[in-house]
Amino acid sequence: MYDGIVQELIDEFGRLPGIGPKSAQRIAFHILQTPTFDVARLSELLSDIRTRVRFCEVCGNVAEQERCAICRDPRRNQALICVVEDAKDVAAIERTREFRGLYHVLGGAISPIAGIGPDDLRIAQLMSRLADGTVQEVILATNPNLEGEATASYLSRYLTTMQITVSRLASGLPVGGDLEYADEVTLGRAFEGRRVL
Amino acid sequence: MYDGIVQELIDEFGRLPGIGPKSAQRIAFHILQTPTFDVARLSELLSDIRTRVRFCEVCGNVAEQERCAICRDPRRNQALICVVEDAKDVAAIERTREFRGLYHVLGGAISPIAGIGPDDLRIAQLMSRLADGTVQEVILATNPNLEGEATASYLSRYLTTMQITVSRLASGLPVGGDLEYADEVTLGRAFEGRRVL
Image (cartoon, chains in turn purple, blue):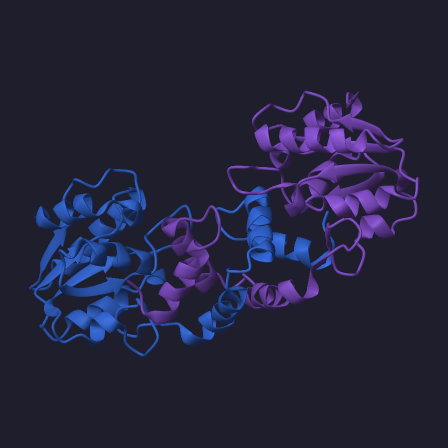
């Protein structure tokens, strides 16, 4: 509908999640017509993002070095690991300021429908982190939905053979929802009320 | 909350219209974790957009040359000019396929509250297009809201001194809304039913 590059930019924005054709058009024109919007900055960030961001070799969180900022921090409780599905969940939990241990990002949850089994998740890496006996508790903070519960119960059965306390985030989180979208208070309460499995 | 560049990218997306912090985070992670998303393409488009896109020196529509594709097209009816507030409105009208004349983009509407007067709009440029007598009808297609109606009645009074038919898009457009968001059928009907002022 528009001359060349404007339509291309609209199409490209329309490929991003949650952005429909109208929003994409609105964004493209905002960029074109707002002199204060730093388009060069966004362009530069996008061109750097994939090369500069890697995933922490210990926990799988996003990082700009071999290890993420949390794994590098000696003040974090090394005896406590919180297992989450996604790096976005790490950020959500950090916002509660309730948890001072370490994380382990699985990279998803067990889902027979989506064809994701235990071997597709970072479970072997979790096991090797538990091998030296430093870790005393593993908190299972997978999403409170079908896949997250299945993953938690799989891990719980797997971990009972070891001398480690395994806990699950308390109810308080709305069932069927996504951990990533929980508010800070609810997520904080869920941490306080976690139960031993 | 995230290490350096990831948070910077989230913040930058959050500055775009209609994108809140959660959406910005979702977009940034989509870009990071979806290998099929062509991040280099989006980065390149953003870096080029402001230099490659200009506004048509005749009608004010977006263009990649001195004149836009519509002004360059000899098959368009040169006797008919449709006056709109914004380049996005040109695209909306083109989608109806009801109109085969030319456009004139005002660059806004008269709004005493926002401090926009007739001199801030491309009205002088419209008058000079009408000077040679080629144009026989001017269709006022400003938005059917307070500012758009004020602009239309201002232009209508201004144009009555000339030997030109002045018309306004018919009702059919929901009052109080934005022309840009009208569906094709409604907008097409509004063209058919336009009334002479």
